[in-house]
Amino acid sequence: MVKIEQENGTLITKVEGRIDGANAREFEDAVKSAIGESSHAVIMDLEDLAYISSAGLRVILLTAKDLWKRDAKFALCSLPDPIREVVEIAGFDKIIQVYVSRAEALASLSG
Amino acid sequence: MSAKRSLHIEAKCNPDEVRRAAEIAEDFAQGEDWPLKVVFQVKLALEEVMMNVVSYAHEDGDNHQIDLDLVSDAEALTIEISDDGQPFDPLTDAPSPDLQASLEDRHVGGLGVHLVRTMMDEVHYRRERGRNLLTLVKLRDG
Image (tube, rainbow over all chains, first blue to last red; front, side, top):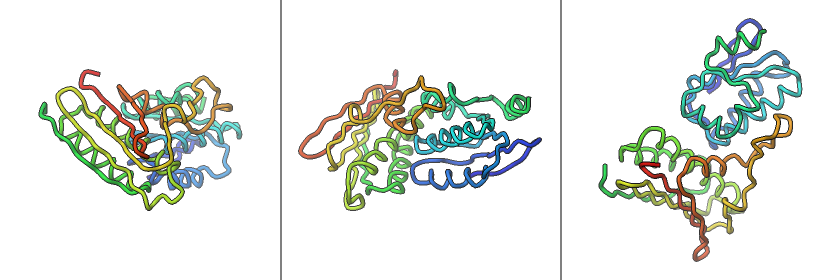
């Protein structure tokens, strides 16, 4: 569901498959344990995310708020079209940085 | 694809059953040649509505069920979601998210109903014979 990678001091959480009301709690726990108490920049790569409902969006918003409080940078990248649509309807693109590719997100967050 | 087809699905009031029902509905919509974008939206709307029922409608959740009736024809995909829980009209009883709020002030929640309203062409609620009946409509030309 969540794969952890590191690139140049930035933590990348790659989210895969589908996040709905049945596994959103598991998703929340996985993201929390990946980030821990760190205040390094975090990129959530959604390239392989097939589906997300409001239960999963809630976890993304909580993560963004949590990192904001710690002064840590946070961004989403590589959203497939249907996921991008949901993220935009939720208005997240106005409060969370969204990048087309991981390379762009990395360039921006490390700058 | 223009023939009128219908499907009835019953689900118990828990998240795993919601997922199962949403996947059956997804297969049905796909089989009726709805565009993938619509199939995604319908599945999402269904999950949001059913999860609301699971979360709010009952104090003794697992003893109740949610009934789904899907009808697809040349013009529209219509889904009626019915449950015998407490009266709950998501169109008026659910809070709307403040889409203008900053990250700091943005409340977590209220997103499900907002997604349903935005993605469906029509949403109607009525209370009838002790049941909540929510109808979602997606038009072919919507």
